[in-house]
Length: 90
Image (tube, rainbow, N blue to C red; front, side, top):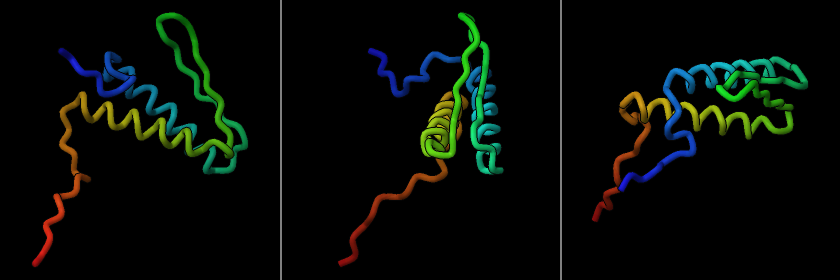
């Protein structure tokens, strides 16, 4: 049985990378002082747009991190931020 690990499972890596670029640009625009940023992209069933404001920059950050994680998983990248297990000293 196949276990899904992300809501992004099944999306092509190329599509994920394009969306990641759009979200990262939106993040940079917000950080540069823009009040409202819209990230738009086209899917097979039509165009989509998401608008972000300074108030929900945390949501934008989480979307970027989620896409990066899924791209890394699909690309077979090694997890370099994983901490080693703690070993108590006696």
